[in-house]
Image (tube, rainbow, N blue to C red; front, side, top):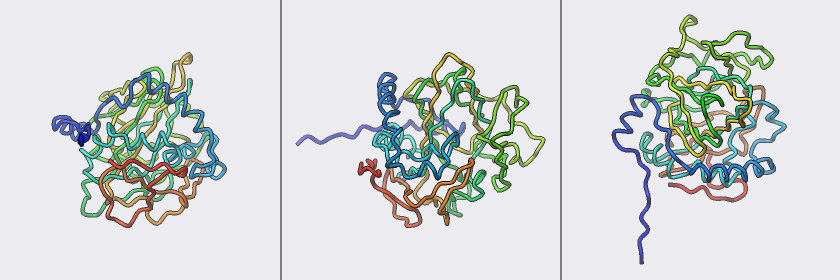
Amino acid sequence: MTETVRQTFTPTPEEVARFHEQGYLGPFKVYEEDEMRRLWRRERLRLMNRDNAVYDEGDAQAGNTNIANYDRHLDSEFLADHICHPRIVDRVTAVLGPDVLCWRSEFFPKYPGDEGTDWHQADTFAFASGKPQIVWPADQKEFGGTITVWTAFTPATEETGCLQFIPGTHRTMFYDETRGMHYQPDKINASAKGGVNRGFYGYDYRELQKDPDWRPPEERAVSMVMRPGEAVLFWSTMMHASKPHSAMDQEMRLGFAGRYVPTCVEVYPDTEDVDEYGGRISLKDYGTVLVAGTDSYTHNRKVTATTRGHVFPVR
């Protein structure tokens, strides 16, 4: 009998060390560009059907609220396999250890003419809903936030609104998420922030600044230009933003983010609903997904298959 050798995509020790220093790793290839374009042409039509989505579109007040884009990996076979993709999971486990959950996924569309996303950091993700959405164990206080893997489904360029990072900022939180922000979707951003027209889905992230006079060191920013099928892995606590989509003759820029934590982290503790971005979703059908290793903890809701019965492939 021929033994199957598992292909691994674990980064080198040098790459891991660079990640810890800078706060991000990549871009790296998950799919060939032609493959990504073909997959997205197919999947964008399938995703229009929300019959098996875990969040009711009406409850989410979908419209233009970002909350309607959450967790489609829980009903889409393609996205279920994507969050478990070896090219992603092997890199995540190199940072977080062998036992890892995906606790959320999100689409990030940016259409021609859309503003950029404001500079921000996320530790507990309490900034919009007012309640911590992830809580690390007390004995691991040096950690926080989540590992985000942001995959470009369409071209992410300087003109279409690529991500921007400020390397090395992941170790210090410049914002206080407990202050909360005021949802003002109709507020017009009359002045450019740092010379770039930016916003934050109806919020002003500057409300959370610990020092109201502090300004992000944008002169250190790097742009993450990515072709379709490429991804970048980064700490959510690193200062990140995105540019406006200024190319009126180009297609929508679409990114898909999977968010990962070790199994020891509590996800949505004592929470039954998520209320943010002008919408509310019930967590009654929600569950974390084990993407690698084992989960010996009992503090998180768990699912092993999508709502359509597709089993998540654990690494």
